[in-house]
Amino acid sequence: MSIRTFRSSSGLTLAGLVMLLGAALPKQPVHGTVKGSQGDPKQFASVSLDGPGHYAAITDANGSFVIQEVSPGTYAVHVRQGDRRGDFLNVQVGDQSLDLTVSW
Image (tube, rainbow, N blue to C red; front, side, top):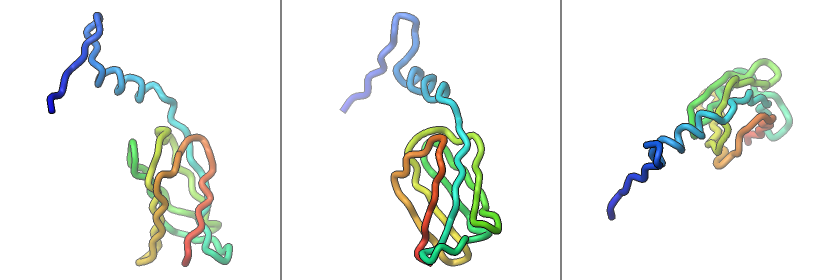
């Protein structure tokens, strides 16, 4: 298989165009809560987003978190508290609330 580089008449490569468009998307805050299956807030849990970027926050006493300036895209979201964890895959992230329920 060969990889070809495409150039426009201005010299911009396709890879450069993709990077340019990705950089142009506005970053948004993501906020949400982490609760257990009984509705109990999970305080001091680590929430991380892995996708187009890596972001993390710690929940407060109400299980709430805010992560500022997140690039829109699809992420794997991980919640950890001690040796307990919850994983959520293919979460579309933008300017929205992520209300996550873990089984513990």
